[in-house]
Image (cartoon, rainbow, N blue to C red; front, side, top):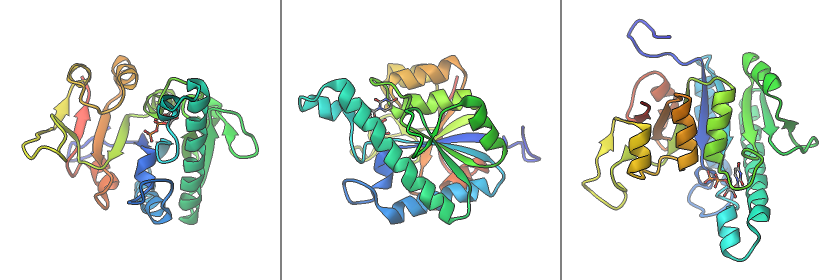
Length: 242
Ligand code: UDP
């Protein structure tokens, strides 16, 4: 749907952030003021009446690939990574509820004492009731990432787009932290992302988004008010679509 200015209006979106987005400048783990800041960003979008899903990575605590590189069995390491995402989801839940927002942590790995199991229809109902759904434990399968989990859940929940909050305001042709002449794309196609290895998300997540025509909007989460601004059609970002 578009408003009077022709700006696309979003009713339901999924915000994907990496676990590292929650660690602030610490280099590891959770930084509560940073979690709180991101919760405030989510609140401002929720206040617009947008239904919000979230997927948070686990890289601030544990990554399966790192564990397996150090001799751990890959699947065990991946399950540890998935459990890390549950910790991050609980931290975000606490921060959102402190703002008075009703939330559910919904886990792809059953752990009834901690989080709801994933039942698609139930999750949709939560969204309809304006609860923020935080999808935890990735896809529940080793060898995947939370980017793929985000794409999967966004499709299942019929989100209009995935908003990938990063440290930079979009997708660049090369790393803007290392190259002064890096150029930001306003728009880039899924196939270009894959061919040029642009590092938006891993290849399976991009392919799943492409095959289901799900746009990915990459924006800076470091910009205060950035998430709300992008939803209102302002600010800089890169749109990945056909
Ligand atoms: N993971 C997994 N299956 C999934 C999602 C995640 O095995 O469906 C594991 C994997 O080991 C990964 C870790 O969880 O390294 C943390 O997720 P991710 O690397 O996507 O976190 P981010 O980079 O977004 O912080």
